[in-house]
Length: 348
Ligand SMILES: NC(=O)C1=CN([C@@H]2O[C@H](COP(=O)(O)OP(=O)(O)OC[C@H]3O[C@@H](n4cnc5c(N)ncnc54)[C@H](OP(=O)(O)O)[C@@H]3O)[C@@H](O)[C@H]2O)C=CC1
Ligand SMILES: CC(=O)N[C@@H](CCC(=O)OP(=O)(O)O)C(=O)O
Image 1 (cartoon, rainbow, N blue to C red):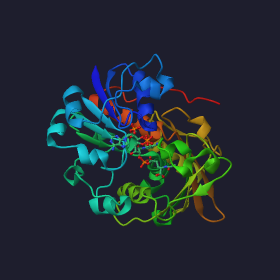
Image 2 (cartoon, helix red, strand yellow):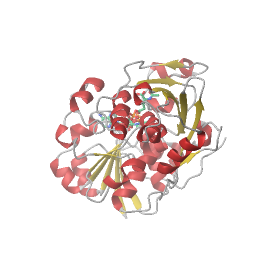
Image 3 (cartoon, rainbow, N blue to C red):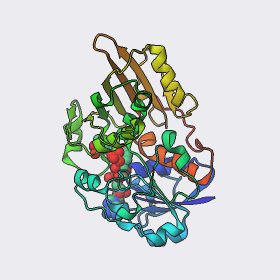
């Protein structure tokens, strides 16, 4: 059995990790890290775990944890993982970081967009950007740090990747309009996330400044061999618990039919368990992926404007966070990639 520790187990992404790992046949959770609930029973914090998890919450002592587990998930705010990790820890244990600390390869870009000093820039190069469908070959038993991609970025990149990679669209014309449920903002109390502030309303935020913009640019830039790609990314907060919906627009770079574009998606995703390219004219909906590790993708060619509209939906806490992290763990330890993740979406 692989022994697992979770730092940030009491957050939304951490709780989702616990839920998924309980259903994984090859792992045992031995450390539930917290900042506010140390020594309290985990199931008192999350009653969905009543009679399922008896353990009490521990602290975030990564050095001690490294002696007790094989892999540590950090489901913590930006900057925490980078401030804890060191050579000795990495010699003992693998790290799957759900925050953005090791996602961007350029530390200056990280510090500018996150307004944080990076405490471990020496590990950025070796960290693998764990978007499994694209970087699967880079994840193996020697990998020490996984930079687990987040919800908006996973949806945006997977939705657009075949179009960019196959030169179907002009990448300089990409506009991504994204919507997120409020669990994307985490469990911490914030006025902006109170029921009356969110319910029956929708709003754009981080317009022109959202920190996921450079991450999507970097990853789609790799797909088209560019390091200067710029695009527009506008997130919106919507009154639902879970889910990300991306609607992306771009100019077509060549004459293509529906079949051409479908063939491009099939080229990359036909054998992917977690990516479902929907039938013609079917648009992805967040409710059809909820609770699962699936990403649903659809597209429509718009000949009047010579554009394509590509759409993607996933569950921010699963494929957008904990599910993807478990998928990465499976690759790290040589398990079936979908072990613990063969979960049908829930509905309603
Ligand atoms: N929510 C989402 O949809 C997604 C989240 N992520 C990423 O996952 C990470 C966690 O997000 P999320 O679960 O939403 O956040 P939450 O605010 O819900 O949870 C944060 C967790 O981190 C712990 N924590 C906070 N500060 C510290 C600290 N200084 N030391 C130790 N532990 C600390 C909290 O502990 P306690 O509760 O005990 O105070 C809690 O367990 C973030 O990096 C986020 O970007 C990625 C993709 C999607
Ligand atoms: C609704 C909401 O607030 N969403 C968060 C993003 C989700 C997240 O946790 O960010 P990562 O994907 O980078 O880990 C935000 O916009 O900051």
